Structure formats: C-alpha cells, structure tokens
Image 1 (tube, rainbow, N blue to C red):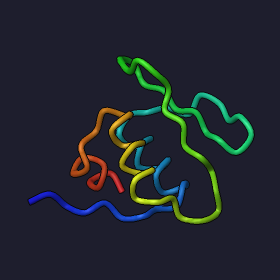
Image 2: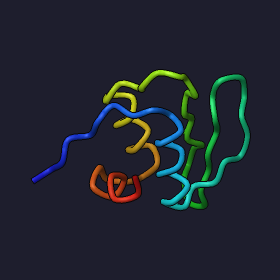
Image 3: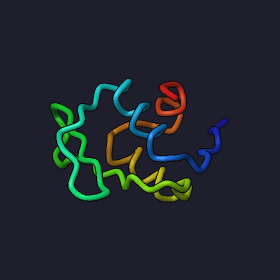
Length: 75
C-alpha cells in the first residue's frame, strides 16, 4: 500500500534528499539547487518558512528520481 506524502518544511526535504545522495550545488535567492550524477536537471527546492504543499513535495521527489517510499525512508 502506498504511503501518503505529508506536507513538509523545506529543511526536512533537503535533509532527506541529501541522505538520498543529492548534493547542494548553490542557493539562488530563496531557492536551493541540488544535483546528483545521472539526473538530467537540477532539483530546485523553495526554502520558505512554511510547509510546502504535498503536491510540491511530490513533484520534488519525482524530479529527484525517488519513489515516495524511498523518500519517506530518508526522512
């Protein structure tokens, strides 16, 4: 059964992505740019103080090439 993805703060998302093997490349304004060998495009995470909506979190997870279960394991 697929787990439901919660709304999360940006710092928790970035931490999970780093544990999944992504590396912070730079920050442009309020957006953090992460990369990983083999990804076609960099992953952009908006570094806002509030929680990011579930849809935004899901889009970031998919762009990173992870499944929801893999991402939740790294939280």
